[in-house]
Image (tube, rainbow, N blue to C red; front, side, top):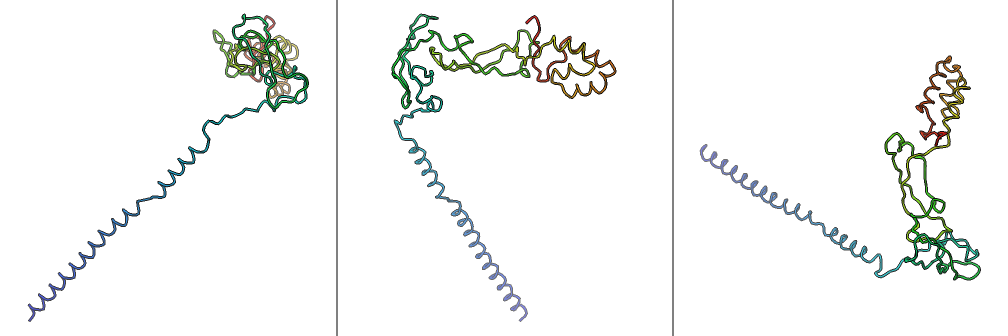
Length: 255
């Protein structure tokens, strides 16, 4: 009787384990299917196609853009013959004799209101903008002493942006880049700084002249460092070691 109960219990355990294995197998096979289906993201594909369509149709083909920015700088009701080069259109002869003053036929640009005849003649220089003299060109020569050094041989060059004066006509582009030697100065004279250092250096006047206010105050209240600082500054200014506060160059008498 005991053997029969033992075999019945063993059979029940085997059947229960088999049933659980089947259930586990179903769960493991269903889970990857659910995960794999969740990876598919069709809306992203639709968004990418829609974005391509909008990008291609934003700018219509064969569209010409009219630049009317000159209207902001051109005056109203001014004499047509006195308008600047940015406000008129001129036919220039590029086969002219170099350096000669030629005459061109000019017309006022569209949408500009002016007095007088809108068609007239205007003299122009048979040169390109970068070939004009410095009196006819304006350049943004700014103080670049921190990036320039006259101690180098040959001196460094600084690239400046230049433009032809508005009342001057020339060939080619009216804006260009041009190199200038690094000889920038803020107007401080070496001779003046040295003279102040010798005569009034004990009161810090030389430092005040060069824009070195803190050192000037210290020199003033210490009576020139009891004379030692005064003597040292005379030597340093004489050799050019102490210069203007903005690191610009002195104007020397022999320049």
